[in-house]
Length: 192
Image (cartoon, rainbow, N blue to C red; front, side):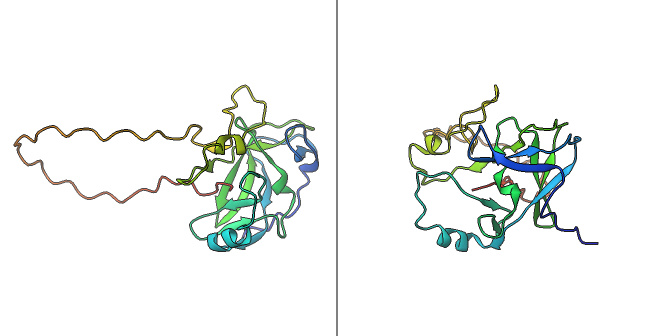
């Protein structure tokens, strides 16, 4: 049975946010584990998203793109709903859940009426990021657990010098183990 579309939600209201621009606030008390709203918009490919925003100012972190998987990006700037205004939070009260290639926002704890909703965008780092990428994607959540950036992981990985190999010793051949299936470490659902 297909999941019905959640274009609107009785749980939330959109208004100005002290964190950034517009925000989404609890219109009533939201119990932990509540599916609050679906993240909707134009479903496009990664190439279409890149082409659509080729002239986008690289110093502007404002975007409504949400990566669903290797093939699909949701552009909530086109046909989106209120879910696009949920701000980033390093210690959010919600999380994004991907089910059947759709994105839902669910509460991770009890949210009181009037409280702003937020979740960790976990925006991935890229090889060609500018040196000031953490400043461009600075976090404004104000949480005591704030890592200062919407990017994930928090700090840019430092390239280490290759280790010198020790001389090989002759050893007995170990018993052959069955091959493991490769596991993807990429978490789908990151917002770009």
